[in-house]
Structures are given as C-alpha cells and as structure tokens.
Length: 344
Ligand SMILES: NC(=O)c1ccc[n+]([C@@H]2O[C@H](COP(=O)([O-])OP(=O)(O)OC[C@H]3O[C@@H](n4cnc5c(N)ncnc54)[C@H](OP(=O)(O)O)[C@@H]3O)[C@@H](O)[C@H]2O)c1
Image (cartoon, helix red, strand yellow):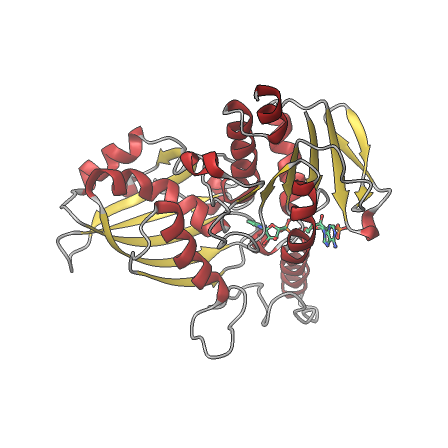
C-alpha cells in the first residue's frame, strides 16, 4: 500500500509519522509532502530517511491512501485531486467536515460512517474528537439532552509556530527581557489566558472553533438537533486540551454509574480520585493515546446533569492517532479503492 503524508513537516504530520511507526502501520512506500519551502528536506522515518516532496500533478499519482494535515486551503485543492487519482484521503483540516457526503469519523464512536465514503474522510476538530470518545458511552446508555462545554486548549493545537511563540515569550518573561510581540495569537499567550480560539466572523459572538465544536459534535454523535453551548479558551500549555463538560442526560445517571460506563468504553482511561489528587492533567495526557476522564460528579443545580473533566493529547486522539485509526479501519474493512477494485 502506497501512503502519502501531506503536511509531514508540521505538528500533526510529524505525529502521524510517529503513530504509524508505533502501530506498525504497514505500507509498501510512504511518501512525504509539504510546501515548496520544505521540498528536498530529509526526515527520518523508522530506519530510513525520506525526502519531502512538493505537491504536483505528477507526484500525487498512484497512492492508496493520503493522510492530510496541511491546512484547509491545501485540502480544498489537493484532497479531490488525490481522490480522483485513486487514493482515499483522511483529512485533518476543517475544510471537508461539514459536507454531507464526507463522513466525519472518530474511530471509537461512528466507524460505520466510513462505509459510504466517496474518497474523502474528515477527521474532526481536536477538542471535539477527544470529547465525543467520552460522551458516546453516555449517549448510548441514557441519551444526551444538552451539553455546556468550556475548553482549555494548548498551543500545539494551532501548530508549530504557536509552540515557538509560547516558548519565546515565556523565555523573555522569565529573563526579564522584552516580550516578542504576538504574531500567531491576537495577544501575548505566555502567562495569559485568551477567550478566543480561532476567529470571530462578522456578526457572530462565537468563534469559528466554538461553532466547529457544536456542529461537529452533532454530526459525529448523529443527533442533529442537540443543544450545545461551547466556550473555547487558549491557555499557555504546549500539548493537551482540557475540557469541562456539563452533560444533561435524558435518563438519570449517577456519577458511579457514569464512571462504570466510562471504565468499560474503548479509548478512555478514568482517573478519578480527586481526594488523593488524582484527576486528568494536560501533562499526563500529552504523549498518550487514551483520553483521560475524571472529576465525574453530579451537578447540584440539575438532577439529570453531570460534570466531567476530559483531557486528551490534541496531536494524538485530536488528530494524528485518530487519522491512523481511521486508516486502519479503511484497510480492515476493505474500503480503500484499490481493495474494492480487487474484490470486484
Ligand atoms: N495541531 C492540532 O492539534 C490539530 C488538530 C486537529 C486538526 N489540525 C489541523 O491539521 C492541519 C495541520 O495542523 P498543524 O498543527 O500540523 O500545522 P503546522 O504545524 O503549521 O503544519 C502545517 C503543515 O502543512 C504544510 N503546508 C503548508 N502549506 C502547504 C502547501 N501549500 N502545500 C503543502 N503543504 C503545506 C506545512 O509544510 P511546511 O513545513 O513546508 O510549511 C506543514 O507540513 C490544520 O488544518 C489544522 O487545523 C491540527
């Protein structure tokens, strides 16, 4: 199987390569793509060193699978071209997520949505991906009536340049030197908390990230009219998004019953002994595949509401890991174009 990794030099792309190695994802050839700027750059992949290529009509031919993490513009232009050339694209950008004919998939939650893909599969927004892993068992057991979400999102969610911005600003603050002005974020991120993730579109009080969370959660959970309110906040953390989620259920669910459900669910680890200082933190989640859940407690203001604290590695379950898990499902279910041709 020939696999293209598009955006291989970026925060998500380099994690995709790491996850492919860790999970021994089988390929006959892996080809790395990035922008013109990186063409010719060498990247280590397992025992070999691969040369980064630029995208062109010629270089994209002959792939079975293409894992994209190169931003919306690149996905808009190049995902259909890879697909027309025979590959199935798993895309991390937001561009294709809302299209009706593009499945938006989290491997533990709605793998069946892959069955009717038309050549492009979308990976959700990082905050959404980790949250729905924890919500799915609750939805299946007792139904969900409403969600109120507050996120605390790390800077690697914005990409490599944002990680450098936090590092350079934090160093300057600690050294007592002049803090470099922000170029990625609208304000200084070091030692600060910003109630803005992504952009405010004209006339909208909610950011594009908040809108994505609300829309994508409904699509993945298959509850098109689910009432959701989200506030997304950027915090000076390198990796790991934390989320406070208030879940209003259809039937009553005690915290103990909820913990039991979460303990049995795939992709989750329950870390919930707050009296002993045990609860999920971003540092604990970074580098881990599981989404961590804790602080499971009833909401004193409503008998059918629970509060959860959900933390995940945004580069892993929020992007690279889920993309590779989706790729594994496509292979296992014979859903690549090449396997369909062989079968027919
Ligand atoms: N970071 C996360 O936690 C996360 C989670 C979910 C989804 N995503 C999405 O994943 C995508 C990548 O995010 P990231 O955080 O990895 O960003 P990043 O660190 O800035 O990396 C961007 C990658 O895209 C490549 N690229 C840029 N313009 C290109 C072009 N015209 N043609 C080909 N390649 C191009 C870059 O190559 P060069 O090195 O050559 O510039 C780099 O490899 C975004 O759409 C983002 O929204 C990110």
